Image (cartoon, rainbow, N blue to C red):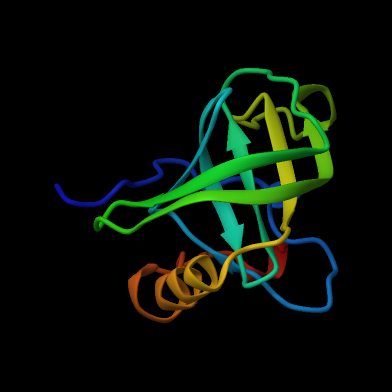
Length: 134
């Protein structure tokens, strides 16, 4: 199998909050940080959110890699933490201990090009069966 899959669709707190630019909900991207790996839940050209199975503490600014199941790897993207939700404030059936929303900061021209390519060609958008719950 050449693609990561999610076996449980995340509950609505994981999906994009109101923002100027909508995000694509995805199932095949990983966020890799110095504190571990998380599943990217949604992404756009300005930022992303990802869920962690175990609780972590993240600084306000840190680096992240984006890894696609098809082989794309964007390295050392500097991000700013914008939103953090721990397991105590999620739905009872939530699978993540922590969900972070981050904004891209000071990305290089090469990183911007790689991100553009990823968003335009490589991501598989999540077919969310219950859009009325978003």
